[in-house]
Length: 124
Image (cartoon, rainbow, N blue to C red; front, side, top):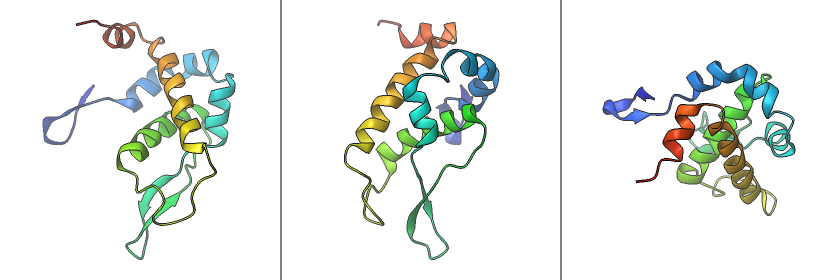
């Protein structure tokens, strides 16, 4: 976790990614759902030069960085994305597929760090 805007506690995706880069490559990068996400990442919502909402591709050659950025983007698009008002609608079922694959990957990643797993599985 890290201290974010207005002292809000935020997940430190990059620290997790950097700490477990090798383990992620070894343990989970060969899964078909992860290969799909790395090869077909979600688009990131942007404000273009004409001050209009648009979309851009995630461009990163490092598969682990692309995977983690894709997970963050799925989350952001789900809660903040404008969906389709500014362009083509994605093929039917793509958003659902991204969410399902993203959830699977998050559950796989939580098992890499015992503290994350402990916090995630903690019962009140």
